[in-house]
Image (cartoon, rainbow, N blue to C red; front, side, top):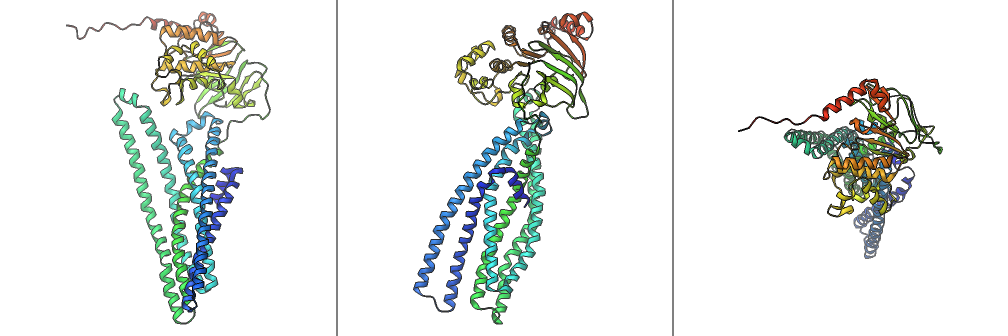
Length: 584
């Protein structure tokens, strides 16, 4: 019942699509009884010496018609079950991906990449298997077994009760085995998620591991995880062996017990010969059905964990927002007494308040870990503040739909992610309906055009593995081209020129000056020479605003900003000294 409840919850209004294929499976189950009935009537006629050629033909025709009807019904039911199930799960994948899009970054930080990937791929595939194969199989097998068991009561209630007694003995073993399936299934699932995360880490971090000569250590870590998965799987099978074997033995004893007790009743004249033969046939069929049911039901229980994980994923609440349409007065941005922490234990931002007027530039500087990137993330509402308010255009960002808010914001962060797609489509992410001319112009402004044309297929060159074949500067320039193309009124830049050579840096700075015109800009900067013209500079240290003002104001105070500028000026004069070792 719990499984059916989860399925109804996940499928929502689409669950009606499963009713027809399941109904057809039940009809097929009823049709399977026809063969047993014809066999029973044939045996009775033989024992009573009443079998004729006409009856043989009639029974044969009925069996033939029943088989043809069952083939057609089963084929249609299987097609409907598979096609509708695949369609519903395809919609669920898109729905779940869209649901993930509405969640805060906290959800992705708390759960490993292996867990999230497993939910979107393996769990959804398992759920598809449930609704297309396993659930219909369980229902069909159960209905057929129940019909046969009910039929035995019409033949002889004493032997029917005997069969029920055997089933009652087998039932606890079925429940025992299924509880073990759920227990070890959860362990295997957690280990599989960890295994996927470690494999992804091993592949994606290969360059770093090689440079640090740590490939063997991380390979050993991956091997250990795989070994843990193997041990858990083997241990689960060992634990399952006892209840499964006991169930099989009990169910298979159904025929010998009926033979023993039924034979005794036959000798005593309590049952007729045709009743005894019918019970033998039905017991044989019932044993086979119960074994098939155990296999399908056990698989259903194993897959139930996947369905439960999907249900939990949907239960994760998205960022709240007002359903009403919000009109922004302008693109001024205000932080009012904002406090924020990622895990509620360590405070990242402490009582942050400032205002950035529309069309102005704000530079965020300070030591690493001070909270600069967090401020940018909060503006885009990747997280929600613990307390305080963030106001954009006179409206609290919590009242703005996340999709609408992100239309107003362009970002160029340190970890620029590129899609496994063409260069052209990667740039067009900034504006999906952009023309070729607009894409090319954005690439030219971001200094991408020349190196793109040098690629094998130009703009149609496919980028793979998140852009691992491109340099950091090239990836960053493509990200800048996206932002230029999007032309959003709010611009968030993080180390936008960190990976560029001096020539391209100058070009990018010119492009960014063009891009920043009329926009509310936040620049997360470490090289202070690039932000001297910012309208305001905010120095964040240990989650607090330590200094705030323009370059001249802060430099004149001779405080922390003054020290940072002078430190960087001294660093520029550093050069590689001549190495005297190894000289002849």
